[in-house]
Length: 335
Image (cartoon, helix red, strand yellow):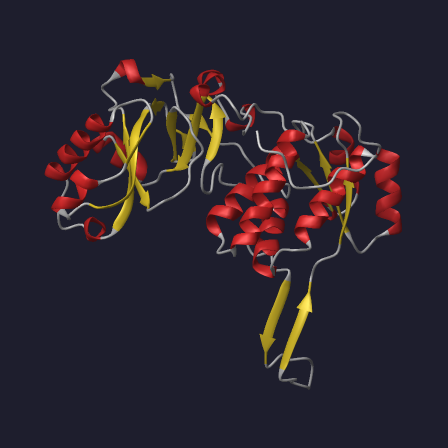
């Protein structure tokens, strides 16, 4: 594994916190806003607001710029290490700030839940390193960033892995499924055995793909046979020349399946004339290459505020063994 670029410090908690801050202070406003939006679970979160013709009583200045960011952070690198008395001191000495408690615990420590209940719940936010790791990955996928930001976030993720702060094993791709949002992709897969998305979309190496649709992870996890990163389906010559990334199959199988798909798929779809990524999956009828479970895994994921929250926004990685045992998403560990 490549080593992280970050320096080390004598105190482990200080090393982790300093590393996180070193990254955050070098990010743009949109990227920072997206990260804290994920931590807070608030889709309308804005760190800095710009407003023209701001109305203030009987005056109307030409513009207003104001910031809403005021956080204090307490980091723990061992499980079950949260000190309630320490958090109470933080809260009492910084009453206007929100307190973020970052720990490796798999679920929110009871003392944080109790303290939040006694105070204004939104003033205390718990997050573990697995959740933050997922947020960083989602932000990298969804926010337009300059190259150095992408590099910094990937290095921060590497730092979390190297420090042993994650609960999940990220290295066993043969036992892992990537779960994608699939309101349209789930019926598309069942009909064609194909997953289509924007060209060159990045996925970590995995053996299986799963689909989050209808507020549940659906019960079929097909093997990933291979993919073509960028293809115009209606370009007859492009398919023969396509660069194929194989996974659980061979190049010939990927090309043949795409030819088959092209024959039966309506050629009037506008996406056929655009560059897309095509992932060829084992068909649902091929039971030797599809892991199936008894029922969909219902999403019970909630933001810290208590509102319902989508299980996956871009993609998530989960061990196939966990998917075979779980009945609800709170029983799953994100890689």
